[in-house]
Image 1 (cartoon, rainbow, N blue to C red):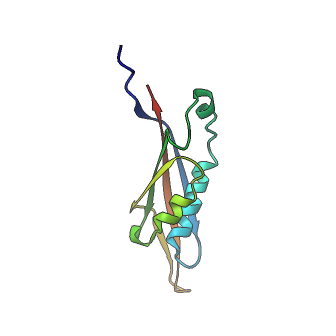
Image 2 (image 1 turned 90 degrees about the vertical axis):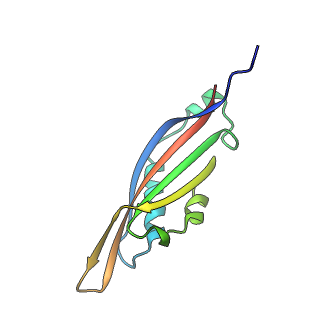
Image 3 (image 1 turned 45 degrees about the horizontal axis):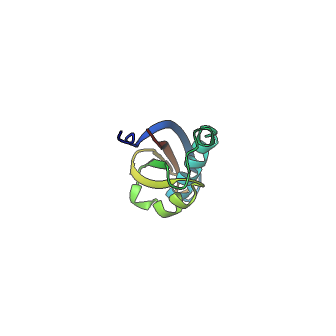
Length: 119
């Protein structure tokens, strides 16, 4: 009898927002958005299912900001505590200029999807 095929299935999707109100730091806003998403969940099912978070948990992060090329995706990746992480920065979010102060507020959106190897 053949072993069951293992497929990484999405088990959770969390959303978050973050900002950098002064200075236009897209990475700072992205990091805050990811942390906001992470604080909405507790993945207790990983232990209950016996999944090794180092090898059987995949974390796919999508960051939306107006200037995705200004997000340090390696810093965002390093901020995730568990799993095999991938980060993709895309066009999204919001820039709010301050015409009087020559400043910009950056608002980032994050979608954090967790997939587990399940039969």
